Amino acid sequence: MDIEELKRQIMEELDSIGSEDAGSLEELQEIMAEKMNAMNHSAKPDFEGYSSTDMHFILYDPLGKKSPLRLNELNPQSYSKIPLLNLIKYFLNKLAEEGELKLTKKGNLPMKWVKDLDQQNFIQDYAVEVYQKQIRIEEDSRSVRLTKMLSLMAGWVKKRKGKLSLSKLGNRERKDDSRLLKRLWRHYTTEYNWAYSDGYISEEIANRAFVFSLILVSKYGDKTRDADFYAEKYFLAFPFMIQEMREVYGLEMGINFSYACYELRTFQHFMKDFGLLKINYPKPLSFESKRVKKTPLFDEFITILPSLTQ
Image (cartoon, rainbow, N blue to C red; front, side):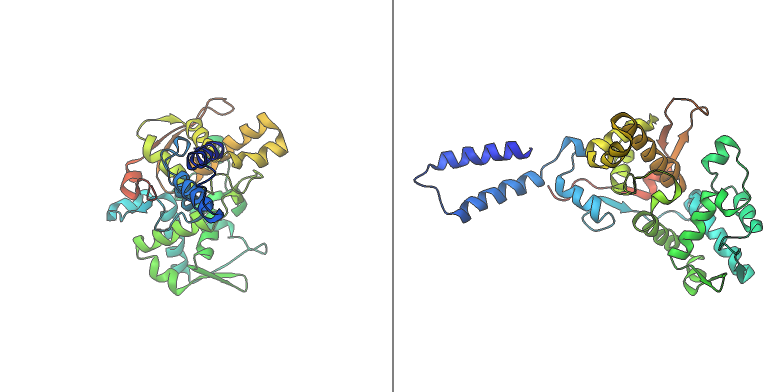
């Protein structure tokens, strides 16, 4: 139901009351409030059956009790299937062995560490995977930069006088896969700015409402599908996300860049980092879409509840 339909229903209700029996302004406001509440709690096709109230929690409290997202405890062997978790764990264990690490003058990891982290092959960056880019310094590798950034953000490592060392928290949680994953997920999804790793102007696309992307993959991901299939549904639910791109690049290019931004951040980065998705890439310079399918780990780790507000 849209606003015009709501107005029509209220006018019909007022007509049925009649001018002689019409109540106070407070009574009219109560009718309006009841109708608005019903509208906000009703299922919307564009929201995959969720309500506007559900979407509020999906957008603004994605890890809260009223969000449909639930994270499950994993079997011990399943943690090895999460690329980013294992890269960070390797980094923390290596730092524990070394004691401390002297950074470069620019505050980056030294070349020896960058190459070592990259050669573990927990995460192969898209530029490396498709274009065979050589990794030499921290700026060359998104995954290495992400590892250092999230380790600092989560408080697992501390930086003092140009050196990195393991914190007490990091020393404790590097030995506990469950706690390490929970803290990593929270910082990655709610505090880390996904736009940091790409050149797109929008800071909201994909990062905001990431739970809706998980809803879509949970529902449709058993089959291999074009990534555009998910982007279309995401922007149908959140058309305002495209506005900034359209204002800068125009209608057609704005939509194209928005789709590309969403697919990069959601699939190539977020879900691939956590081992939730398998991606089939098109040939370089091809106009074909990427094709994606959820992994068994997705359903083991992610549970999506039906609407909690209807």
